[in-house]
Amino acid sequence: MQYFKDDLKAPMACKAKPAFFSKPSVNVYFGTNKLNNGATMHRSSYGFGKGRGSIGLNPLTMTINPLFENMLNLMDHVTKVVRETPRWNTQLGRMAFNSCSVKIYYRYKDSENKTVSKTTEWHVDVTRDSNGTPKKDNSQVPETPVATLTFGSAKNLWMRRHRTKEEGVHDSLLLFRQVNGSLFVLDGEDEKHHESDGMHWRHMSNMDRDEPDGVTFSFMFRVVKMTTEIQKDTGLLVNPRIGPIKRLQFQKGERLFETHHYSEQKCITEEKLDKCFVDFKP
Image (tube, rainbow, N blue to C red; front, side):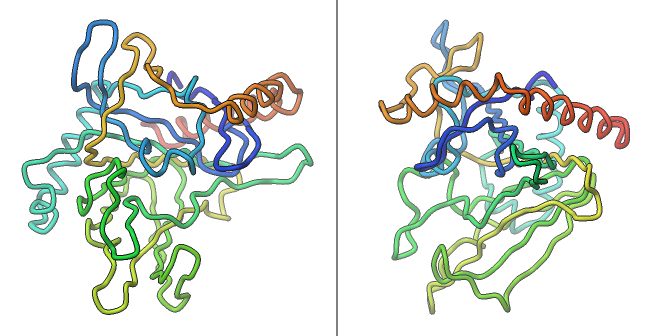
């Protein structure tokens, strides 16, 4: 609960909304400390390259949190499990997981009283150009595995072959059920463009329909090459990049935190979280 703090997000050209009550899953970022500058520090950071615009969190208020003791222990355990498979051990090589991005899924009521299920839509973790070459602004090291540990209600992970970002091959659709305590490893080569036809795998996640009040946490351990300078005491970005249009969008969005709808849904969501921790006994 210490890290479950709301923030505004305005991905691409969208208006700013509270992250808790917009359709995409909630993102919480943790990274290893790299370079200590006194009052500031460089910290491993995922989602600060090409994915920055699509995630859309307010750079003035978002944080990159330090890896706390239990999470470090969990990362060590996950690393040992992943390295037991020779293929993934080779992909990691001398590198190590240094970032944990957490996604949180649940349902809420929007301002029109419609039920919305949080999702993560079709995407790749490493973006590439038309020739299949990884772009330079990726934060994740290309062709390294991503280990996802699930806590809470079961959710669905879908994978599908794609020719382009928009064009998927439906006959290739695969479903992986991620239940509480399960570990799923995304192979580092899944997103590579095939040499014969340029096809590659994309993935997305959604909630299980059978658990209307369910809450799911996905802990994703990655190897990232990017670091971001943060304020040591708060985790806020030292040099947030924001243009005048985005700044105005976020200023307008602040009023949504003061509405009755927001207060009501936040209370309901916190009750769901409390129940999740009781039901699954971390």
